[in-house]
Image (tube, rainbow, N blue to C red):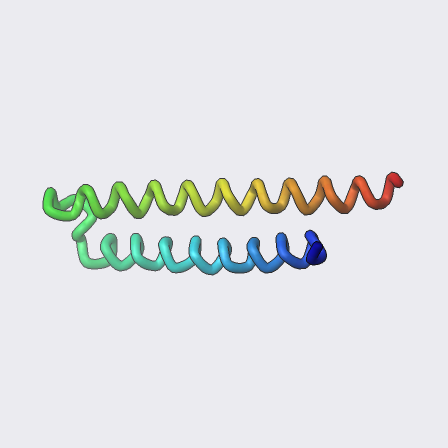
Amino acid sequence: MPDEDAVLEELMGHLGEASGRIRASRRLLLEHAMMDESRYLRLAARLSEALDATETASREARRLRDASQQHRTSS
């Protein structure tokens, strides 16, 4: 089995990059005053949902990594 901590660290890195790119996409819509246009409301909503999902996944990966590290130090 691969080193769980290493996998979780890499996962957190990918999720952090994804969150940053989603934020940049939202910022781009906002800077061009497209967030409030009805044509772009669904896209803006999907970007918000994607950001929530990636941040939730990142928190879960961090929780698993911390639990794994704590389990090893208490054993």
